[in-house]
Amino acid sequence: KQEVTQIPAALSVPEGENLVLNCSFTDSAIYNLQWFRQDPGKGLTSLLLIQSSQREQTSGRLNASLDKSSGRSTLYIAASQPGDSATYLCAVGDSYKLIFGSGTRLLVRP
Amino acid sequence: KAGVTQTPRYLIKTRGQQVTLSCSPISGHRSVSWYQQTPGQGLQFLFEYFSETQRNKGNFPGRFSGRQFSNSRSEMNVSTLELGDSALYLCASNLEGVTDTQYFGPGTRLTVL
Image (cartoon, rainbow over all chains, first blue to last red; front, side, top):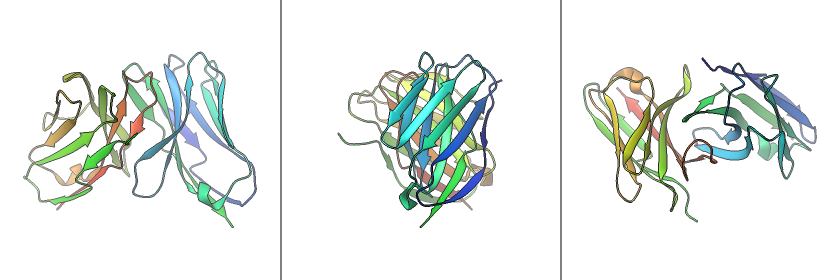
């Protein structure tokens, strides 16, 4: 059974720092991996989708990598801003559904 | 392009009642999935509809059901509500299925008293 873990559960950093969020999964047979952002009480905003054949994807200040063999993905955020404060969720595509981690709550302090 | 819309945004019901939630996907998207989000269990898959057919179902009791219309709009229904059904219900829209980017709506916050 696929399990997705995100570490750390919470992170507080000063504005301007570069940071890395981690996601691990137990079964390497995935279709893809997607990173989302969720603001309090809101829906999920898709940030990056990495297909199983890809190693990384970039969008602006965000870079996500995927290593299927080790069951790991990282989301790198460059030059963090207070507006980046949110919960970040990773999810693996497992045949027909997404299996989510429990998220990393990020606070970027001004 | 308009995003995924969900109605209503908030609902308060009492135990034993039933509720219907609605999701309108992005134009051209044929797949709609539903997820339940709670503090204790996180995000869990409920079911997926594609071209008016339920393709997949998660591990939820039969009180949870859904349907999809010819215009791809989807509804989910929960009968005989229980306190534990209080959650944020999210729907995700995509072109064909899990291999595509999933676009989520803002969710419906259901509170069962």
